[in-house]
Length: 201
Image (cartoon, rainbow, N blue to C red; front, side):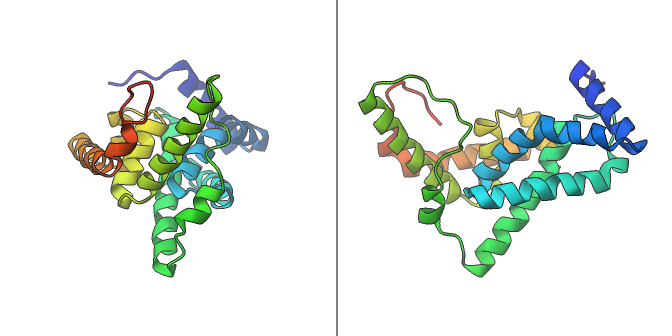
C-alpha cells in the first residue's frame, strides 16, 4: 500500500476544507500548483496564451470534480490528469482546424520559468538553438508520444506517475517513451551532436 506523504496530507486537508465551504483553502491549492500546471500545459501546447487559458479551465474542472478526488492520492497527479486530458482535447481540436503553426508557437519563446545556468554567450546561443529545434521536434510527435515525453523529461514525472495520470499500464508508458525517443533520435541525430555536455534525450 502506498504511503501518503506529508505534502499529500496537507493537500487532502485543504480539499476537505474546500468541500466544507472554505473557498480560501482552494485558492491556496491554486496558488500552490498553478505554475506546475502551466508548465505542463505550455510544454504540451507550445503556446503561452492557450496554456494560460487551459490552467484556468483545469482548476475550474478540478473544483467541480473535487468530491470525486480520492484523498489518499496525489492532488498534483490528479491535476496533471485533468490538464493533460484538456491539452489532448485542445490539440485534437487545433489539428482539426488546421491551426497548428509551429513557427508561431516558437515565436512565443521557451517556457518562461525555466532556469538557465550561467554560460558563455556562444554556448548559450548554441543551447538556445538546440532547445528550439528539440521543442519543434517534440511538438511534431504524435499526441500519445508527446504527452509521455513532456511528462517524463520536462516535468520529471516517474513512469508510475505517468501511468496513473493517463490511466495506462506502465508497460504501455514505457513503450510510448521508447518509441518517442527513437523518433526524436532519428530526427535530431545531427542536433544532438551540438550538445556540449553529452546529455541525451
